Amino acid sequence: MTSHSLTAAAAGTWRLGDLTVNRIGFGAMRLTQNGPALSNERTPHDRDRAVAVLRRAVELGVNHIDTAAFCFSPLRSANELINRALGPYPDDLVITTKVGPGRGPSGDWIDWARPGQLRGQVQENIRQLGRDHLDVVNLRMNGPRPLGELFGALAELREEGLIRHLGLSNVRPEQIAEARAIAPVVCVQNPYGIGERRPRSEEVLRLCGELGIAFVPFYAVAGAGRESGAAAAEHEALLDVARAHDASPAQVRLAWTLQQGPHVLAIPGTGNPAHLEANVAAGSLRLTDEEMRRLTALEQPAG
Image: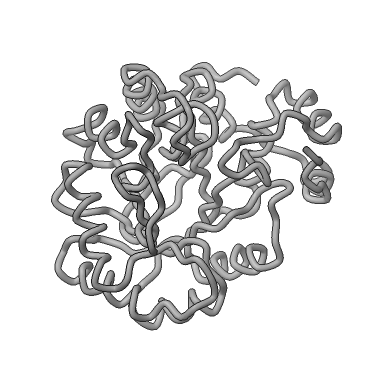
């Protein structure tokens, strides 16, 4: 499929609270470096190219960018690249951040934030992005434990005006219910994609649709490759579908993701301008019901 002149609007829109976004967005996790994300042992992306990718994304209609203060490499910070490239920000641009995990200045992972530490994480995102508030903040969890105190702390920051809307990441249905009893939830980010479909995420996908909450899968392209990226070898069935549409496997993966429901958003990330164009173009790709069934049945290839 051609990627020229196709914009993010082709995928349709969804609302995050009172904010309307195109369903194809941009994830900043891979913006800072080559190789696996969140690693200190990879070469940084060229700064000017990363800035150009962000600006081109907005030109292509992307108005939803996902980032976090902990998305950095030894020489690059995703938030600071976004600030440099896009500030002063377009009125319709929605920037979503995550809190919970933390990294020290050298990149080492530290203990997950306690309720009293979330204010500092929110303020760090605000400083790096050069804003006076955050559009959407997702609380990322690391297990089935109760989240009431953590989400309650973010709800207080929302009341203060530091946060506009709240979301969740890496959660179970019961945690969504617990959070919604405290404050509105506009989105949920869980791992989900071809070869990365777990029963819990299937249940969360369905639940979000019923509740009108955006479901925002991460690893939609990488699948089980997660931070390391997509596997080199793809299923022959997936390759067949890609050839039928003159598309890349990554485009097929994104199209499959978006066709899981109108409430599903995609946030593929890249530091490569050509990949950006292809990712945005995937929003116009429509798979047949038979193709969807074939792809849904696939497991992740070994290796």
